[in-house]
Amino acid sequence: MLDEPTNYLDLQAIHALTDFLINYPNRVLLISHDQVFTNKVSKRIYVVKNKRLINHKALNIGKTEKAQKILLEYELDNLINGPSSNIDQIKKSALR
Image: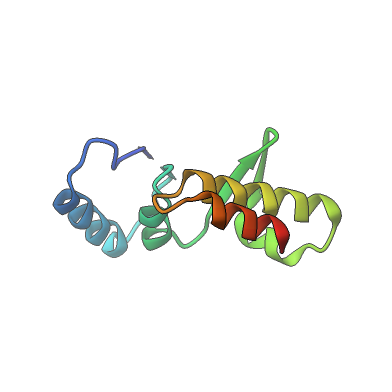
């Protein structure tokens, strides 16, 4: 289990950890807010919303209003907390 493994690492150490985890033959439970890192090393991503564990890919499949709301909240969180976030991106996303 890795809990926020990139918090105190420099860029070189993050790249080394990324390479290690991509080639690691066993399973790892990873908890991280570093979405770039998580997307590179993960085969499955789950999101915790409203005390529920949701498969991130399942959010794209469901057409229900609740699934769409959760997906929009997740995308908004990504836009707000992302390294290149700005108000124009957030407005464009909200208008889609």
